[in-house]
Every structure is written in C-alpha cells, then in structure tokens.
Amino acid sequence: MGRWEPNAEQRFLVAAIELFKEVGFEGTTVAAIAQRAGLTARTFFRYFTDKREVLFKGSEQLQQTMVDALAQAPADASAIDAVAAALATAGEFFTAERRPYARVRHAVIAANPELHERELIKLATLSVALADALRLRGVQEPDASLVAEAGIAVFRVAFGQWIADAEERAYGEIVNEALVRLRTLASL
Image (cartoon, rainbow, N blue to C red; front, side, top):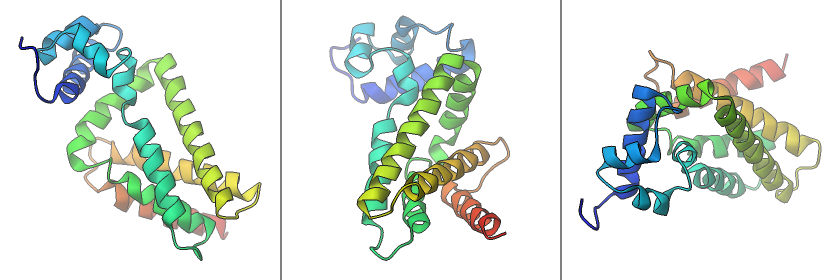
C-alpha cells in the first residue's frame, strides 16, 4: 500500500458498504474495511471514529443544506412551502447513483437496534433544526414544530419509497407527490 492514495474516504465508504452487505455490520471489522479499500486501519481513523460513522457520514451536511434552503425560501412562502424547499434540496444527496448504497445502508440500520436508534436521533435533530429555522422566519410554536415534524414524516416516507427495490423515480418526484398527498389529507 502506498503512503497516499486518492479518494481514500470514498474507498472506505464503498468497502464498508460492500462488507456490510456481504457479512453484516457485526461481522465487519475496521481492519477488513481497510484491507478491502487497499488502505490501512490507521488511515481509516483519519476519516471515521468507528465503523458506525461510515453509515452516518454526511448527515450534518444534509441537515445544513436543508436548513439553508428553508432559510432561503421566499419571505412570503408559507411554513409548509419553506419546508418543501428544504425537502427538495435533499434530492441533491439522494441521486440515482447513490440509491444502491442507500438501500444497503437502510437494511444495515434496520437490522441493528443501536444504529436504528441513532438514525431516529438524527431525524429528530433534523426536525429540531428545521423548527428552529422556521422560528427564525417568524413561525410561532407550536406551528414551527408541527410543520417541521410533518416535513420529517414526508422525508421518511419519501425515502422509504425511493429505496424500494422496484422504485426508479427520482427522490424529488416522490417528495413532491408526498407533499401533495399531505396537503390533500390536511384539507379533509
């Protein structure tokens, strides 16, 4: 192995997800990930604190992107439209190329209670961040929290549809359909 190899972080991500799929999360070691990536375990720890972090890499960036999009929504946008703008930016992360990775990631997390709990915490943190951004726009409580939680529900449902085996639609298309359904249901 060379002292420096390009794209180390991406190589670790690919190697880890392959191993998680092949031998499961519990059966995968950092040493095995490093070996599969053609790098060292020491190099792995420059990018990740442990193997769980491979599954949650990018969460902070996704949250910041969504909060920024909500903040940049037109001033006259309703609270739900501002959240819709935030949800639309998630499509930048959920591309067709990332769908196979997302499917394996989801299966690994669903099969491991500790990881599932962390995923739920990540979504709760995202909801709080969206509610905070709504409050900065002047949306009062409990409306800010209610709209943020509804946005997270749309996010989860759309993501679940997007990773389904036979699904080929873009994430953004699924989100838009879910938002239309939510608005229809809310008007009943």
